[in-house]
Length: 186
Image (cartoon, rainbow, N blue to C red; front, side):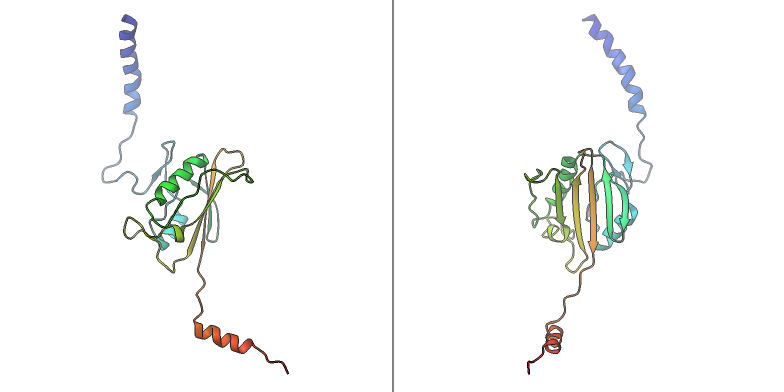
């Protein structure tokens, strides 16, 4: 009994300084307003070029917290995170659950695949939201999200591929083109 009572003050002495080292948010800021918190507790801002491009389409499009931008090639953005695929999969599945139009697949790879992969056409998935105003508007550029487990299983790659939609020609224009390209046999 005496040993237990002696350990309590020791534990208290070790834990109190650790609690005091936590920093409080600066006055006038809201935690998470501009930065995202990764699973390890490290605060990292979202990749600025990607966030700006997605905001043009729909600010509600999510970016995995703490993912770091590896490469940008035009409107294709490659991010990586050390978090395992199930954690990243859960983040996006939980977020997209607010849209009635999307039915998530199982998080397991098919029998003929060695690594897990998930491709989500966000324009189709982000329809019929429970939260008004968070759907991607019709006619917006196409946003394809791809999650891929790293070969070693030690992380996840995240790709956002943004493509401008081609305008659909009017029926009259298509008919004129078709009339000009038909030939008659002599």
